[in-house]
Structures are given as C-alpha cells and as structure tokens.
Image (tube, rainbow, N blue to C red; front, side, top):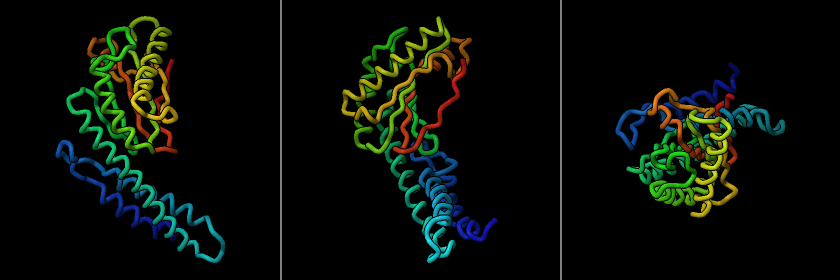
Length: 232
C-alpha cells in the first residue's frame, strides 16, 4: 500500500464506522450502514486518487491527495444525505399504500405491485395507483437532482411478445402520470422488461403476482442505476 493511500485510509474508515450499525428511523432495528457515511467514504477514496494524480509540481502528491479526499468526502456525503432525506419523505408518504420503498446504495427503489397499480391484463392505472403516485410526484418535484427510471414487468403467463408490450405500456402509463403531476419529462426514462426479470417463481399465483409489478428507481443525477441482466 502506498504512503498516500495509508494516509487516506483512516478518513475512509472513520466515515464507514460512522455509518455502520446505525438504528433505522423507520423500524428501530439496527441497519448495516448509513448511506451518507458510505458516500463520504467512497468520495474520500475517489477524491484522494484524483487529487494524487492532478495538479502541477508545486503541490506535493500527499497534499493534493488530502485535498481531494476532503472534497470527495463532502460531495459523497452530500449525495448520501440528499437521498437519505428523499427516502425518508417517500417512506412517510407511502405508508399504507402497499408500495415498498427499498434503499440500494445511493438508489431508492419503489416497488409497485399489481394489486396497487393495474387490473388484470390492463395498463390503466387504478384509483389506488393514482392516489399513491400523487404522493410520489409531490416528493419527486422537491428533489430535482434525481433521475427517475421506470421499469414495467409481467409474469410468464401468455405470449412473451405480448407481455413485453404490456410491460412497456405499464411503464409508460406511470411515467406519463408523473409527468402530468409536474415531474419534468427529461428526468423520466421508461422501459418494459416483459417476463424476463422475475423476482419470484411463476409456478404459483403468489409468485406471479409478485412478478407483475412496476419498479421506480431514483438515482442521483449523473449516476447510472444498476440494471439487471435481461435474459431471453
């Protein structure tokens, strides 16, 4: 390990320790990490690496690395705090709606099951879906520095080509509704995955119901969400 990295490691470790084993504000249970702390740690390491290779000869590599680490930690922690606050407001708004809120690093995923969103073989939003999406839109318009990726999914019942088109129409319906509620169109990306990304077995009705869903992934602007690999 280089001397520069040895100097930066305590900064990253401190940020990580600050975020570990924190208490969830929603369940009271211990959680594995605090996303703001993780963001600061990652930012420190990335900033250190960038700082170490930048600048002219007037500043030592050690000094540039330390400056870069501090700047990176601030940016990383800022993104984490921004998404933390947005997550908190979404969880409060989604209580009792049936929509699940899941945090994946700096991304926030809203899982909208078929029981909330659409009737059988339909891409028309239900009344419950419209009410819930009103609350989602109210939060999203307050946090413009996020990209909104909407993915439609179906179970494996019926023709695969038909399911693909249905999933696309459902994703488009959710995106169009959010846009109509004031969410900027340039923040929205809609895509259908058909039956290709199941999260449960299609051999049971319960599993098929879980697979019929729409997922909304909120990603800090400038970052790309992790996409699942689509299989044929």
